[in-house]
Length: 186
Image (cartoon, rainbow, N blue to C red; front, side, top):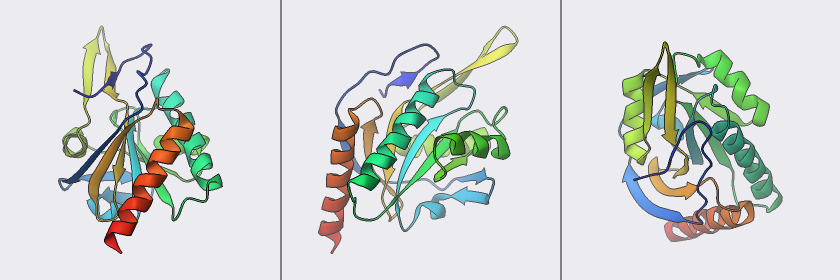
């Protein structure tokens, strides 16, 4: 079972990379730029993370760490670029324009996407992520996986990384994995 974050819980840190090569199910989400589907993931390496904008602690911390990782990878002269996608699992409170503003606070290169719950579930199941919305006295809570999901340029899930991993170690693991995968295909 993957770690699932809930409000006011800390992220369990593990220095792990789970390698895989799993096809993604077709899905259709939306950003401020229009449709975002499995075809949008083709041609570049992409890090996908799940969350929601009203998350009080885990999501802002994770996105801050992801922005730091982006900077760290850029300064390490990583071969090629990565795309960064934040998938909101709370479409009711996270319309695309608000989601766009939220992710851009952390990095101008981050892409925010969301969609109908069934479409979100398709993507989540494809990468092994989980999320759950539970009613709580007129309001609701959202719980979600806290992993980073690495999608390869062929559109397959290639690995999972714990967001709590030391940034230098995470950058090293990602860089090694991506460059190793490139060498295998050339």
